[in-house]
Image (cartoon, rainbow, N blue to C red):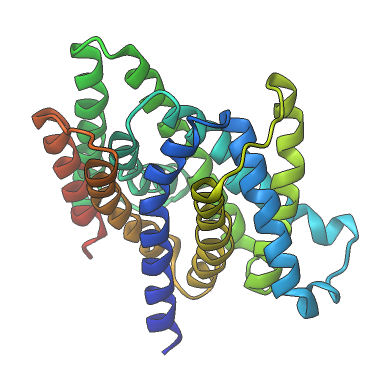
Length: 286
């Protein structure tokens, strides 16, 4: 039963995150990547602190306890969104979502490098297919001289490296903490670590009702609920199982980008997306 709930939890978080590419792309017209990240996770921390206060008040504050949560905030919040939001500033939301489909392949590469066991051929070929898919998507921007998109694609890909490391680090310690505590403190540390990046931009708050709804969606549904459900899934499923479910993000993320932002996907990018999803599906087979 726990595994079923964990599976459903991760799927819901992926659906939340798939829409976030289009929402973030719209908000990046009003905020810099660093401003958007800081506001999003500052609000997310407030929501988490209010909702999970009974468990948080019992949490030790000494460094030995907080160090893993600090690392979770730095990798899974600060560095991830520095790269992702900066990337979305330059590339399309649908394109960024397709790049996210390569994250499971990145996870498998890390597993290959750290595992002493023999790697099955289907997983090896799955990684190869996923890498070809990413190269097709990035290469399409280069061929069409869309250098902004190319730069943005590379930044989004770097966010995937941060996400994979986050998954492995948090998996080591999430049996020690409740997912509510992990979520809240990674929001806190992630928000604080954004502050140095704000020195690169002027902090300004522009707000109206559509912007408020978008920020609320990103901070509450994508950050608080999204990370809470994802961390719960990581507690009961393997890293490979959880990361493979990220295939839902490029599929729905690309659809949202086309519908809401009127973006277009070239034939080469569609083929690249098919390669990525096929590769990860092949890798996940026993």
